[in-house]
Length: 174
Picture 1 (cartoon, rainbow, N blue to C red):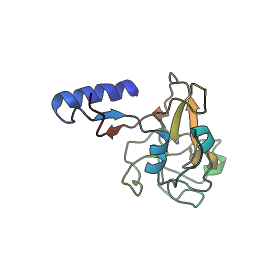
Picture 2 (tube, rainbow, N blue to C red):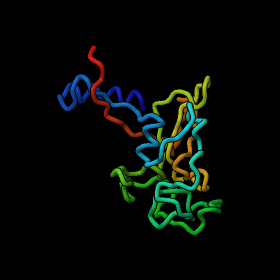
Picture 3 (cartoon, rainbow, N blue to C red):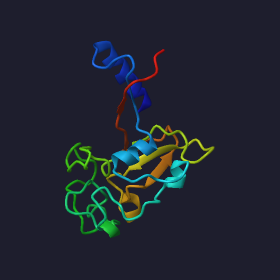
Picture 4 (cartoon, rainbow, N blue to C red):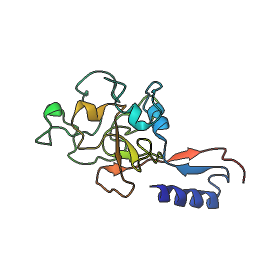
């Protein structure tokens, strides 16, 4: 994901689409929370902020999710006990933008795939990368909280792991 951001930055700088003081990167954990509409979260590390804001989901505060809220581990999954009555229309990943955007106009901040963040430590001293959102196989209330985080080694690969890019402006001059 980070190599893709470096490649895209070089490509778009070369074409003039972005300037020399702009670059693409992954969002930080805190930026992801802001994009998801969460209030300020206390805690120095993603681990300290994990699941601290209760009963707030990408679609609001009600449980279960309303129809077409996102792509989650729904009735297509035999062990989807908490979402057994929910049907998002897809068993695995869905096309980007298949569901409504959030209040900031951002699509798919929850469901479909977990997204890598820029943060290199889930908790102080570890080497785990932070991921946010939820995957198409996420099927519990805790997994669907907007404040939920997961973490993996940077080399971990899965069909429900992905990323989004952030365009950063006003980098320091070299």
